[in-house]
Length: 128
Image (cartoon, rainbow, N blue to C red; front, side, top):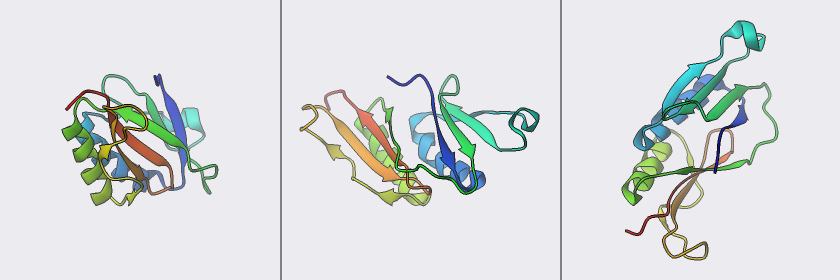
């Protein structure tokens, strides 16, 4: 279960374009930008469905990548749409949509590296 989490990104605007596209099929969007006076001028924004749960924090140069974050999808079709949108937005394939029965029989996921090398996944646990 994820309450909220954040990652570092080297170029906030590039990351925002990627996540705007990749999260749209999951019903998530950029919900909040922290005012610059609270961040020392650094861009910080939070994505979510109802509240911000996934935060981007610009850091130049960004370090400590290769984080893995899995986001829940309501259907396998959402997983497929996430993957297609993320790839079209500049993501790099790290595992096309499909069953991952080694986790459990209904684990349907897709994995994409975002522009900063973070391993982003969408997963549906529902049968069919």
